[in-house]
Image (tube, rainbow, N blue to C red; front, side):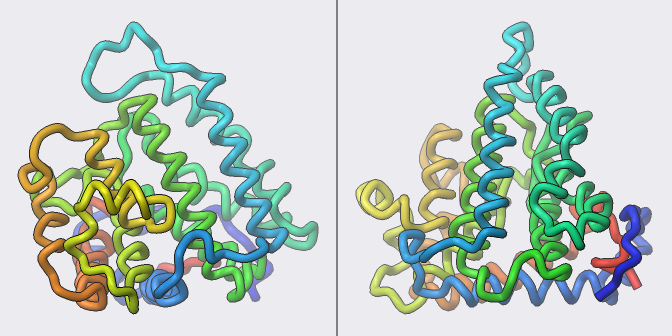
Length: 300
């Protein structure tokens, strides 16, 4: 265990740095972590999560506190553009200001010196305050924050299911609230050909939840099924949010997810989304160029 924490720095400054990133210990740690989280929720519903550890309860409390700031900084009604309400900058400034303090509340005393290394991952996890946008790179920053918490022993392997079905689910709900309230622009959206304008992992983790069930991927677009089972599955919650935010036939605005509904088995969906995450998120310079690296997630 490293005891010399450091403020993380950007390392992927140019497309030529991508080969170093793909060979780094940080990259392999993230791939392993995301795959392990996916495996941990296979066949699990949200309601199957048992008693939460004090550490998980601490993160739940942190996210609830961050959500409470939305009412403190209501959207600026003078902003008339389709995307980018400037009040988001106030919310983000509050997070920046409180980040290290929030980490110390979360961590045991003997790990307080890790707060400065952890804080930048948390600050970057909800969107960019300058551009007022959000995308899969910000989602990745939250995953890196969780991975750092695991590396310093603040989260345990036994927390894996709760990390996905309690913590990550609450994180996504907060991000959706921010997107609704402040109209964050999708960062690097592929439009109709992207999986989703904002998120990726709810679909990867959510597809794992269905493995072993009799439900086929076709049911994921059935409004009645979503109404009945939506609270139990991250995948359905993702579909429901898209349907709320976008107008028109689903196959027109979300072609990839529409095509996935035609795949016969969830195992194949899960495998395909895992490959797609490595290629389209971790493997793309515009997504990963803003990532930072320190002693816990090393670029070497």
